[in-house]
Length: 174
Image (cartoon, rainbow, N blue to C red):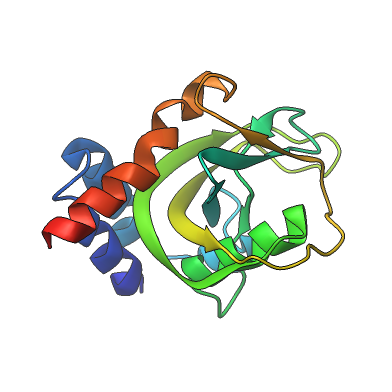
């Protein structure tokens, strides 16, 4: 059922945390429910966009958690994680990103109970894509967004600011 997602993660495992990826692959293999479109109340797919403007990374203020996060959202039925990252980046910031991107990480995220939406605590398998910013006028943003450098970014994301340079170096070596 999730072979396409597993293949993407396995391609990453050469450069990432094998233990983390093994756990995520195990969850994908054992899942009997559809993970797209919020059908599974315990485990869902999401995708995040890492988009830089010069050496600063886009962050949004999450409307419920009230913290700075990468632009991201749930993978809808019939949608691929890359498509989600591109769509959510545009919706949340008003800016556009390239239609292609590079998967740079996959995380398992614990999502707390959301009283406003009455959603129980659950987990997301979050696919993180490095996308290129398109230089065009922005549309209206759904959420407040910020451009932050490594010193300004939330602790969880300080190391990710170097992702663009790392990906460019690895790509040149291939």
